[in-house]
Image (cartoon, rainbow, N blue to C red; front, side, top):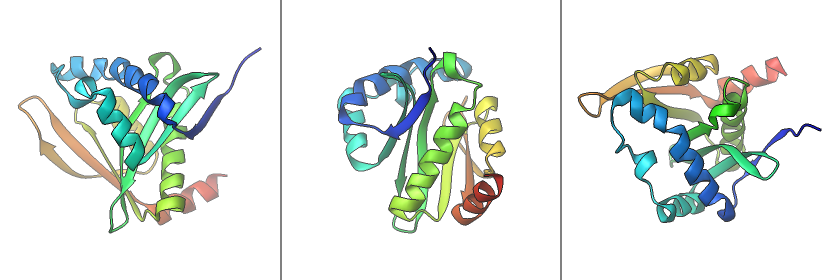
Length: 169
């Protein structure tokens, strides 16, 4: 009997599973950029628990196991910043990243009045860039963080996203 993946708000009890998954998922990013000191690999459990308390955090579960997660906050101007989109390597390439992205956008629009979505990824992270472009994000800037890492910032309008989702439903 197969189980389906469910997406829901993260609970404080999920922090340890999210942190372990984050550590697993960001290994490939660290390798890509030759930098194992990136924040997702050095974040403490206490810092992650603090994030759970102040933003919107969703998890994807397969049974009791957390197999994906995403986080978001909204500023006073209505710009939602989406971070930490992770999917367990064995679950990748099956649409779960897109489901998490749509779920966090929907939650941030409904509960926190997001008007615009913003996220960032490394310039060499082709899979991430493909996913974000597929879901309507367009590049709005770049920032050289280190000699090896340039972050690409992508954005989209929340109203346009809602119309596109409604049309595809």
